[in-house]
Length: 100
Image (cartoon, rainbow, N blue to C red; front, side, top):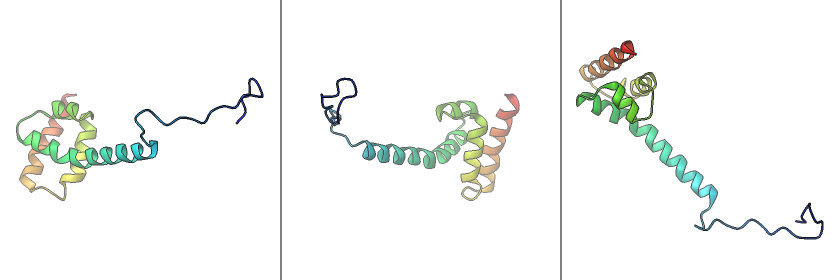
């Protein structure tokens, strides 16, 4: 490629990053990590609240709003956990949302 400024100088091709990483491979790894976090968050929310943690702290730790955490947890829990556990965690989220 010829430089736009001088018209005669060739612009060298972009060098690979010093770590030798492939941006597409990096993107695939980051996407996989994000997917893992998305899938593992609801059971961790569930366990933390059953262990006595308050939903605001749990949501903050997950970098989610309380409403977002409640929805994400519900989508997972509705077909996964026993009714008594579901109701305990749901009630904790509902109480926290009323206090906000």
